[in-house]
Length: 109
Image (cartoon, rainbow, N blue to C red; front, side, top):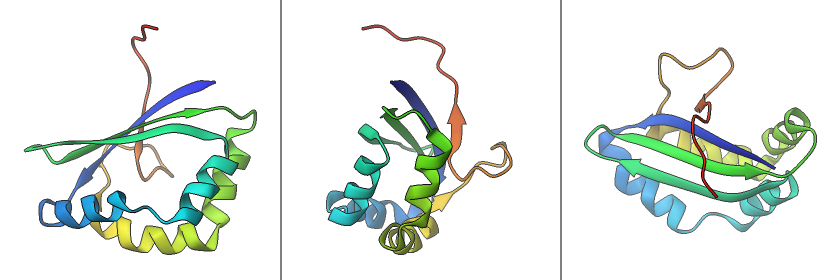
């Protein structure tokens, strides 16, 4: 299992919309994440900096293939059309990233 953290900005005027979307995530989107071996997924909001911090645990053996599976799902693609206008990707993210991935520097069980 891999613990993974990621960060992205959020448009200040879209915070309520983003919260409403995530209060009722579409079942197919959740099923696609689960089928791609994503577990324990949480998104945190930090205001007034307007940052979203995402955390999940990846339980698969081929992360790239599982991420392609998520990206290929039509319902997830439709979900992203609602979420992406709320988000502000960080200028410092790596090429090809939407959410900027973060390396772990500490963990305690």
